[in-house]
Amino acid sequence: MKRRDFIIKSTKAGVALSLGATLIACVEKPKYPMIHRKQPIALCTWGFVNANLVAGKALDQGISALDAAIKGVAIEEENLKNTTVGKGGAPDREGNVTLDACIMDSNGDCGAVVCVENITNVAALARIVMEKTPHVMLAGSGAEELAYTYGFQKEQLLTESSNKAYQEWLETSEYKPIINIENHDTIGMLCMDQNGDIAGACTTSGLSYKMKGRVGDSPIIGAGLFIDNEIGGAAATGLGEEIMKNVGSFLIVELMRQGKSPQEACEEALKRITSKHEKLDHFQVAYIAMNKAGETGSYCIHPGFARMEYKNSINTRVASKAYLDV
Image 1: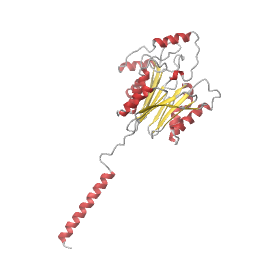
Image 2: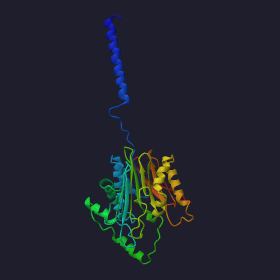
Image 3: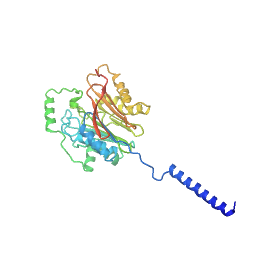
Image 4: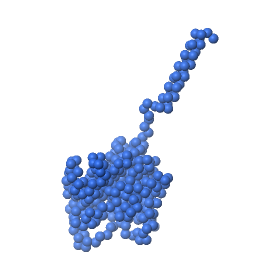
């Protein structure tokens, strides 16, 4: 072979090898990796159709899971007909409406407020605690003062109808939680956004005619709400005193970490409560859960609880399985 031909062929081979290596490198390490979008999911306790729909549509538009959850629960915080969440909620035994809430984002950060008066959107306020303070939880007047600092408006939370019901209650002063009261209770919401990130919010006015200063599970991270973005999330509703004893939402996420489905995890967490009580006819407890694969589940003690589920742009009411289902 002539020297000139050898050089030409060698050069061509070198270029081909170099080009091939470049192509392989491009395949293995793309400069702009493709982002795989997830199908958004919104999940909430009870039959809060509008709240879950608002959150779901917001997710479809590309907003974050935390933004969607706070936007969704705000619908019930502002719903005057809902006597157990936000403005219009039933007061305590002193006639004062106090609200509790917590939020948790996909980074594991969280915020909570308890015993807040005069502020309607306490889930949004819990976010302020998380993002603007060095704390996780603020209570009472301290939380209220923070709200005003960030532009929240002072409002009268006790509505005419709630006050009328309270005055009637004073005639007997009987304190007895009502199971599945008007199909309204705490709203706990879990959202998965288009990036596959999970976040949640939980907000309530607590038990009707509770003792002054009473706080239930709703604003307690791990009880009313817990998120681990590597695994999934869970939220609770019902009698907070029972939910707190077992740190139910945290337990569900840990059970999912061990390989249980959201449904199996909810059922196992509820067994931790039912196994300790011979008589379950005086209270309700219910859980909802979602994992990173987008699988969902729920379980409750008494029939009548349902979850709202927004998937594939369809908002569906899903009746929950119940421990005492007959």
